[in-house]
Length: 120
Image (cartoon, rainbow, N blue to C red; front, side):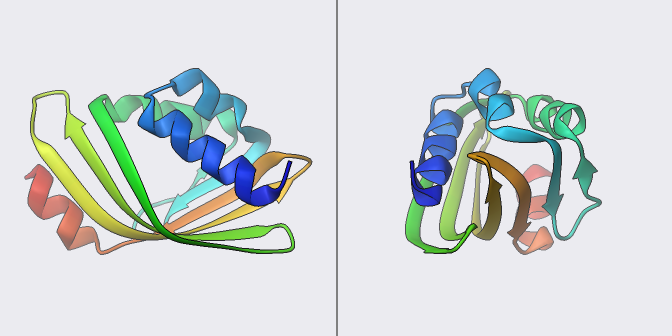
């Protein structure tokens, strides 16, 4: 399986709200870093952070994707319907490093104000 396919399967797991599949996509020592925030280190921490979001619906739209070696870059719009029914939409540039078919590092770059203005 290509590294691009690993990432596309991961995004599909998000769109399906399949938290177990999301967790399974991570290497045990994954580093998940939403760049404006503190990084989460390890599969347990990354999974806990993701599960804490509690979105009702997810629709990540991939605008562009590129693979170079073990690195996959995505340009996306991450759309959520949160547990309280509130919509949230954030343009994101993401970098995922793949090792042995698992996500070893995941960095997402986005404007924190765009995010916080929708959740405040």
